Length: 221
Image (cartoon, rainbow, N blue to C red; front, side, top):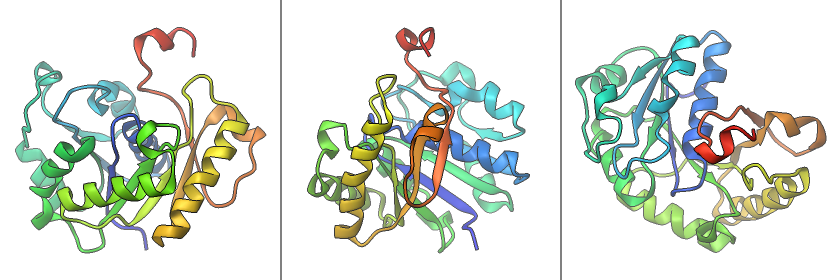
């Protein structure tokens, strides 16, 4: 049975927010009622609330500070966060990046169901995750800060718009090695939708449609 609450954590640049958005939208397309909690409250950059229009169009309830607070660097936990966790809807949480973001998540531990899934999003092309031992170190630091164990990894190997099938496949091998060493499964491999037909990977693939591109890449995509 799928957990009702799914939490996505990861360091800056891992693609955590993009993966969380696509997971929520995929669930919504399948008919699941979703609350999306944007807990990316520290160091504002690439926040899921910037994709409000896409989430609302898919009938996903967005739980985030109001738009006038979009760029404020404050850990504002609104009452709607607590209401969503206490409700019956499926909940997807985009936790903040790095240790400060995980510390915000720690404030909600008493509200998380015992079967909450916590996914560590891994992009092995980032300097801090280029080897299995570095991925393990990131996992340890975020677990210590959040007070919750990582349930599974999400492989998200990419080089933004320079990503090729070869980039994805080589990066997946690094994440697979980390998975074996840490004894953690790979829940999904996140792959740009346009590359799916050119890639053959084991396990489950999460197709990505990009919502969080930086301004200088939006016209190119």
